[in-house]
Length: 275
Image (cartoon, rainbow, N blue to C red):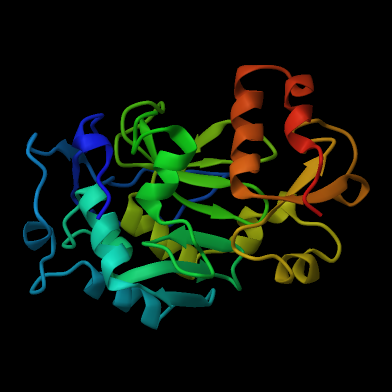
C-alpha cells in the first residue's frame, strides 16, 4: 500500500458533513448555506478501522439522494484495495459523505458523464481523489483546496481548505469562461444534491455549443474540451471557436497558468491538441 509522503505535508483533515440544502447553488447566483467545516485531525493518522464506520456511513445519505436523482447518475464500483488506500490518504471518516463516496465508489458519472465526481478510481475514471490531487498539485490539499470533481468542458470543482476567499469546506468552481475560482456556497453534500437534482442546463448554458451533446458523448471521463480563443475572451460565440480535446491535467494547467499571467502564456499548453 502506498503512503502519502510519510503523511507529512499535511492535510490530515476530518470532514464533518452538513446537510443544509442550497437551493440557489449556481454560477449566476449564490445563496448562503451552511458549509461543512474542516477540523485538523490528530498528527497521528487514523487506521482504516478507525476511518470506516459501518453502522453510521455517509453512504446512506448519498443513496437517498441517488434514489430521487433527476440528472442521471452512474455509480462506478470500487476496488477494495484501492478504496482502502484512497481513504487512508484522505483521512476522512466514512460517516462523512466525502469519505463514503471515496470508499464506496470508483467515482460518479453525472448527466451521461458530463460531470465526473472523483472516488477511489475505476477503469473508466482512473483518477482517484487523493492520487489525482497529489499528481496534479504535488500534495493532497497542499494548495489550500482539494479537487473533488470536474466536467467535460474543462471546469473543476474543489473544496476550500484555506486558500480560496470563502468559508472552509465550501465548494468552489473553476470555469473555462472565467479562469477564476467561484464560490458555490455549498458543502460537499449540498454539491452532490445539486448535481443529482439541480438545473445543469442553466449552470452550463454559456459553455454549450451546437452539437455539444454528440461531441461530449464521444469523450471518455479522462478527456475534456478546450476552446480557442478562450471563452474568457469576449467576442466569438463558442460555435465560432476552435475546439480540441485534452486531458484534465492539461486543462487544469491552462486555467492555473491564466490565473497567474495573460492569455498568451497559456498557448503552449494548447498545442498539440490530443485530437
